[in-house]
Image (cartoon, rainbow, N blue to C red; front, side, top):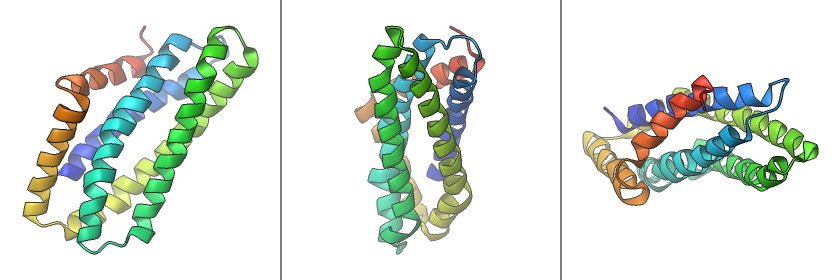
Length: 179
């Protein structure tokens, strides 16, 4: 599997959790703050520490080495990663107040979930349909092998053994809305 295919597979996991986040944000009854807490954990650890790390430390660097300018699509993706981090930080900051019963914090949390889901859905579409094909068009087979190894290293050394799989299972559970 090419590294960009692995990233696309991770996008599918992310989209599952985003669907769960949208479902929580759109509930007419109380939101499940425990599940939202798990979603925030997923966004911090799987989306940012694992997925975005692979892109920022390895994929984008290799794309620049192969002549794709930083100030084009790569800059847009990096800016969107930063926007996502800010939204996740806001959610993380609002969760304690929402848990303590603040309706204002809960409503802001709902709005943040929707904004984050919209941002990431658009972001994923651009990566899957523009950025990744662009990358694959300039990468050599040696580049592909090197990225495969780098991605494995992110999962084993930066995330830890079995953590990637843990988040895949969590994504499926959150998508189903199961406790």
